[in-house]
Image 1 (cartoon, rainbow, N blue to C red):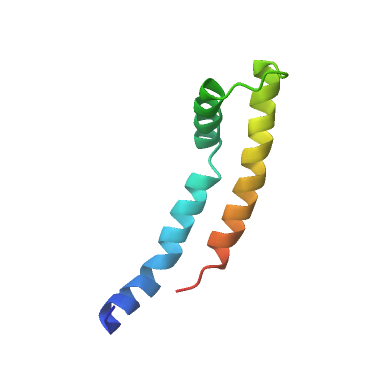
Image 2 (cartoon, rainbow, N blue to C red):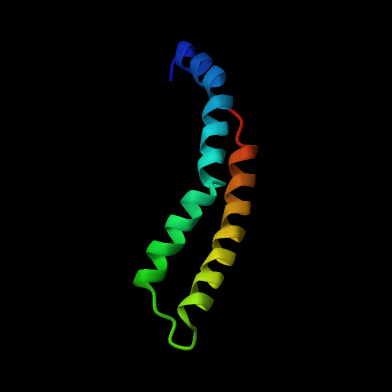
Length: 75
């Protein structure tokens, strides 16, 4: 990466980071993710409602971890 690309990346990173975090933290994306996984995953001892609740909790934990990691990235 040459110096012009590095400067461009440093200038654009805050905006890119903001957009990525907005996407990761989006309730709409979470709903879609949980819906897709819930259709493909069957946990025999749980109802569909309980499965959805569990997947939402898993997503929330992952969302928090990913958001923190993205937030700490500096270019």
